[in-house]
Image (cartoon, rainbow, N blue to C red; front, side, top):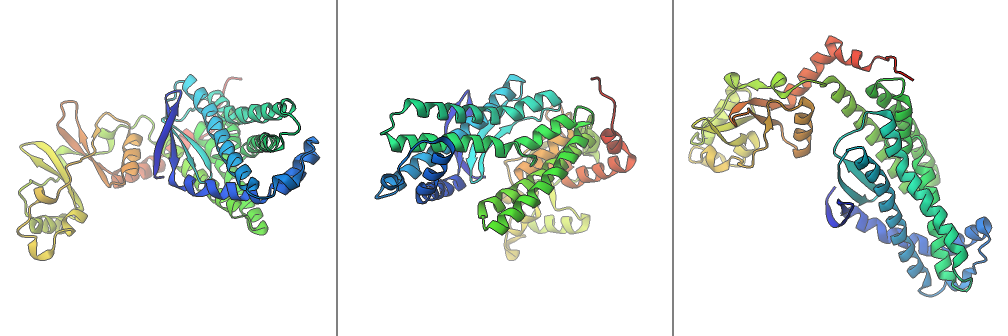
Amino acid sequence: MRSFRIGSAFGIPIKLDLTFLLILPVFAWLIGTQVGQWVEIMNQLWNLGLTAEPLSTGSMPLLLGAIAAVGLFVGVVLHELGHSVVAMRFGFPIDSITLWIFGGVARLTDQPENWLEELLIAIAGPVVSIILGVGSYLALFAIPVEQEAIRFVVGYLALMNLVLAAFNLLPGFPMDGGRVLRALLARTRPFAQATQIAAEVGKLFAILLGLFGLLGGNIILIGIAFFIYIGASSEAQQTVLSAAFRNVRVRDVMTPAEDLQTVSPDTSIADLLDKMFRQRHTGYPVVHDGELVGMITLDDARSVREVERDAYTVEEVMSTDVKTISADSDAIDALESIQQHSIGRLPVIDANGDVAGIISRTDLMTAFDIIKSSGRSEEELAPREHPS
């Protein structure tokens, strides 16, 4: 997501994704065009005695829609802060909170595997939403009856925060309810197995939600269903990988320095391409006097026109912004770094800062297949007894 920071709370950066800037006016418009319907709903639910006509004429609907939409997303931020504060209480730093087209996302830097910690983190957001909803409802009694516009906005936010809490508690992993389900499953199962079960339930929920949205012509529900399905699949896969790579270090998987193919900065692009063809490699560390100075890939080489490849050297087109990883790092950290930076390989550095080898996505996937075939991952996922 492309986002920019707008502030912080409790030391957590709060960001807006570009998609949020698109959805906010849409929500404001939807609320504004449905003021009459919301008046009827809130009158029936809470007997507010609102009058639809003055609230749904002139520019008032647009103003009410804009204020209510902003208030709704403020509630979403507070919901995510609820998760974040509890997570930090358990020692899990929060990278950021980002508002985007489907609400808010609090990014934890690590995943709690203690079922009680995850349970408390998961329910913290809905608890905040319930408090906001109940608090807004009680505030209605302190607002003069003649202040109908204010009572409409506060009543709408009371209802929406309660709906937000209820919706998030549905078992649509990786939503809050799905995480609650995983936490409860993890009481008697390994964390990875609990994730797989919760993910399957989440995908089933996503399919049902998508069908409901399709039949009702609700594009937003269809989008949320798609997000839930993809999120459930992705997190389940990531958890299985983490379980398989438990206690596996980068040095266990990497191609060591003695087997490492490198190129020097003064190698011509023509010679580099010939080397790539012969050795079937598409990327090389660039080393000068034993020191890593860059990385060169097939895409870098292709950027040079064919007629100029004898004249250009590796040094002129290589990337000097090289992402590296320590040989003692966890293998799963290498995979996450490769995915985050959309690269194919990472040079590995030893304790002295020298090149110890290289680790690629292929190395990691091959190691995963071997670990899985050896039965290690199945053992990790097998049920075990937990103390009650």
